[in-house]
Structures are given as structure tokens and as C-alpha cells.
Length: 203
Image 1 (cartoon, rainbow, N blue to C red):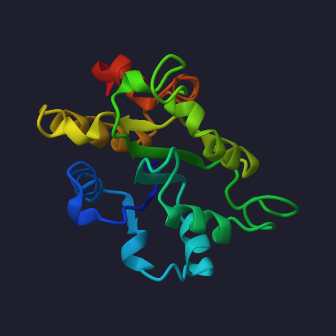
Image 2: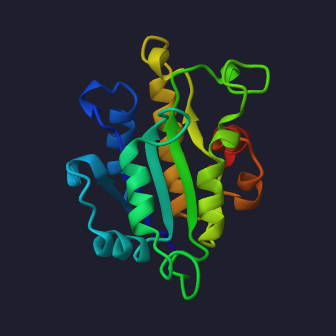
């Protein structure tokens, strides 16, 4: 049975985006995927907690989709977490609303992949930098998957790397929706890009 996917999209200046805008458009074309543009829906950060919690209840897979800002998410996604993931709903006594749901982050990074390692400019892998999201998912009883990322996003258009990434993104969404992604393999990977590369012939 297909699984419903909820994408919480956050980009404070989408009109300037070369990579996130087409990623967003691609996601909107996949059946079974609900896309929420948080900056468009909440321009004053007045997040409707009840509405967001209801959205979470209605979906089996939750995706944060965003550019990487200072090794984390844009501000509205942190605000969303602080307000929506309440004690008694997402964690703590009686807080089982998200139990067994799948969570992942889909992001774009300005630097190339070789900058995200112990010897690189950023000293940590992207999965290591995303540990706060990973731990948040675990506290909420969710199955965490590593990030799916477009590295070197600033030059991806000039280097003709956006279209292949869009095709992988669409394949990933369909595999998640149709439950054809090997979750055990995916959970231990450094990124979902690696998993898609390994299983491209099966997807």
C-alpha cells in the first residue's frame, strides 16, 4: 500500500533559488506527496500547531526540504520543531503520534562534497552535521534516514548536475512512497545519494 509523504519546505528567498525551486516543482508532480511551503504559509512565523500536528498524523513519511544554512535548517524549520513537536504529542508520556514514521532531510549545500569530511573545509560529514535532526527523530520514535543532498549547489546549474539530481529525487520519492527502498541499507549509509547509486538498476 502506498505511503503518504509530507514535505515541509523552507527557503526564505525561493525566487533566487536555482536548485531548490526545481526540486520543489519535481516533488509537487509526484502522486501521494503533500508539499507545504512554510515561508509562504507562515510569513510571520505564526505557525498553526494543531494544523501541523494533524498533517503529521496523516502522513507516514516526513521530509524537511531546505538549503543548508549555517550547518542546519533555515530558521522557520527550527521554529516549527520548537512549536509543533510538543511533549505529549511527539515525545514523552503519551507522545507517540510520530512513532514508526520515517524522517529524512533533503538539502542543498553550497560547498562540494569533499568539503564535508574530517580533512575538508567543514571538518564534518553532512550526516554528522545533521545529528540534531537525527536525535530529534529518535526521541520521537521515528526511523531516521540519512540526508539526500545536492553538493556544490552554487555551480550545479553551470555544470549540468541539476537535471540528474532531479531524476534521482523523483526516484527516491517514488521508492519511499511505494516502499521499495531498502530501509536497513539506507539507515546505515552516509547519505541517500549513496543508496540510490547502488540500487539504481532496481528502482
